[in-house]
Amino acid sequence: MDLGIKGNVALVTASSGGLGRASAESLALEGVDLVLNGRNKDRLDKTVSEIRKITGVKVVGVPGDIRDPETLNKMVDTAINDFGKLNHVVTCAGGPPSKSFLDTTDDEWYTAFDMLVMSVVRLARISSEHLKKSGGNIVCITSISVKEAIENLVLSNSVRMSVIGLVKTLSRELGPEIRVNAVLPGAHETSRIQNLIQDAIDGGRVENYQEGLAGWSKDVPLNRIGDPRELGDVVAFICSKRASYLNGISIPIDGGSSRSNL
Image (cartoon, rainbow, N blue to C red; front, side, top):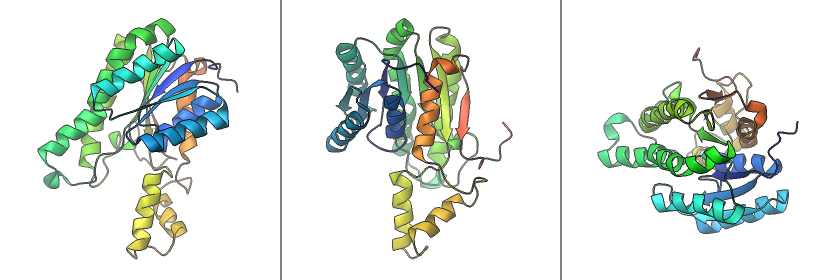
C-alpha cells in the first residue's frame, strides 16, 4: 500500500534506537525525509548513516536532551532550514526508572514529567505553526501502562497519562489542520528488553535468551513480543492520508496482552 507521504518531512525525538528509530525507519521506507535526535552523538550519527544508506532519503541528526528546550527548537529549525517544511512530529522518550512509589524521590518525579510530558508540550507548541501550514500531524509514542498499571513502574503509570490527556486536548484545539494521536506499545524486542534478558541470564534467573524471551511473551495471546518495526509501521500509517480520519485516539500495540476493555 502506497501511503502517499513520499517527499514529506518528519521529526522524530529519541530516535537513535528503540521504538523511535523503528518509527523513523518505517517513515523513511515510505520516502519521508527525517530529522532525528538522540543524546549520544556517536549512536545518533550511526543511525543517521544507516537509515540514509538503507532508504536513500535525506536524514539529519540533532544531538541533545529533549528536556532541553533548545534541543527541540533546533530540531524544528533544522527541519525548516534544511527541508523547507515539516509534515510530521513523532514524540518518543526513554522509559523512566523502574521503581515503587515509596522508593521514588521528588526529583525523579520532576525529571520524568519534564522528559515525558514537557518535551511533548514544548515540541507541539513550537511546531504547530509549521504543521498547520502542511496539514500535518503529531504522533506520541507512550506506553500500554496508560491502559493498565504495570508493577514497579509508578512513574510511567502516572506521568504518561498526562500525555494522553494532552493528545485528546490538542486533537480538538489544533484540528482540523493538525491531527494528533498516540500509540501505546506493549513489550517490543528493543535493546532495553534485550538488556533485561541478558541481566536475567547473568543473574541465573533464566538459562538462555530464548527462555528469557519466552518469559516476556507468556502473557501475549500472539505468543511473542513485538518487532519494533511493527510499531513503526503503525506510526507511518497514522501519519499518512490513509489515516486521515484518525484523530485524538490512542492505539494499543501489544499483541492483545492488555486486558482492558477500552
